[in-house]
Structure formats: structure tokens, C-alpha cells
Length: 226
Ligand SMILES: [Zn+2]
Image 1 (cartoon, helix red, strand yellow):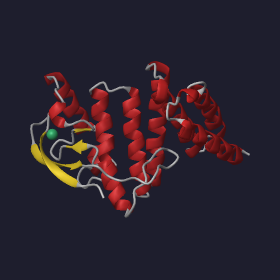
Image 2 (tube, helix red, strand yellow; image 1 turned 90 degrees about the vertical axis):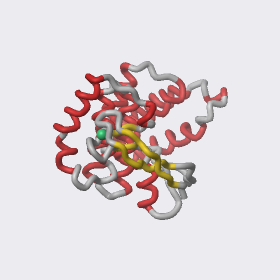
Image 3 (cartoon, rainbow, N blue to C red; image 1 turned 135 degrees about the horizontal axis):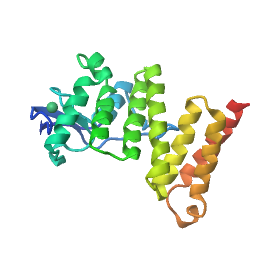
Image 4 (cartoon, rainbow, N blue to C red; image 1 turned 90 degrees about the horizontal axis):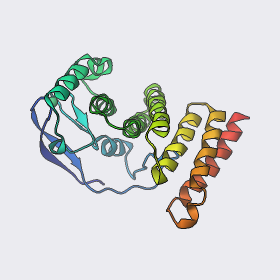
């Protein structure tokens, strides 16, 4: 289950040197309907594998999904990121004993400063919500689902998504709405998601599974809306 090694890492913001876990290849057994991977074995192992996709500096909390050695930050960016991390409310409360979702929140904050796309910021929040669910932190799960939803909607409006990314993002907006109890809104987005697949399925895009998932989740949302 997920060979784990650690890698000597230097924080691009504060220069702190530490050993960060690096997840190797691992086995999944399907996905939940919000695309959260399912892992065999203990729940806590699954949480760890999702969590370790983010590197977090233990000194200043700088976090990112990318390899730290690939990141080049300007002096201004470093300053702004340090400032944001110092002032962030959730980090202030939870830094002393960080829950597994905190790294995603920190990566979101740093990602905003680094100008990441809304689609990527949404993805960080979505993954935070997966970790919260596995850890049974339900209020935080909903908070992150709502944030992911808002980023994904902005990505759809402003980032010109296409192909697979457009279909998956549109579906996720439906699914996150359904999970947050907005069943009618969810149904509209499932219809939109279906439309993005129109015609493309014939060309073997590998998204037949998504077409099936949309049908199943639409049925569920209709039952829940009734
Ligand atoms: Zn640091």
C-alpha cells in the first residue's frame, strides 16, 4: 500500500530544510461519486496518501502540490505568501497540531498568492473535503465542498475549460451541489455535464464511465429533490 519514502526538501519561502514524505505508486479500488479515490485497507492510510500529495513546510506552513524544487518565487511573492500565512485564521488555530486537511487549506492560500488557476484552487479544496470526510470532520467537509464549488464555477466562467476537464468540472459542480443539498441546482448541472459529452463519446474519449455516473447521480438527485 503506497510505498512511502521521504525526500530532503528546501522551503522556497523561508529556506527551512526538512524531510517531506513522497508517495510512490499505490492501488485504488474505484472512486466515490465526487471522484475521491477509494483505497483498500485502513481509512487512515487513504487519508495519508491523499494528504501526502501536498508538501507543507513545518516552519512557515508554505504548501504546494508541486515539487518544492520546481518552484521559483520572486521576493515579492515570498513576502506576500509569508504575510498571508502568518495572518490566516485557520492556520493560527490549527498550526500547533495540524489536522490532515490543513495542508490543503495552506496550499489554497499560497496558490491564491501564486496566481494558480481557479480550477486548481478548486481541486485543492475538493481534496481537502475528501480528507475531512475520511476523518469524519463533517462541518469542514461542507466548508471545503462549498469553496471547491465556487472555484469550479469561476473556472467554468473564466478559464475556457475544454474536453475532459470541462466535462469533469461541470459534473463536479452538479455533484457538489447535490452533496450540499441543492438538488435542483445539481440536476441543471448534470444536464450541462451531459451536454459537454455530446458527440465526444463516439470518439472514444474514455468518458463513458462519466456518462453512466451522470445518469445515476441525476436519478439520485431527482429522488432527493422530490
Ligand atoms: Zn517555510
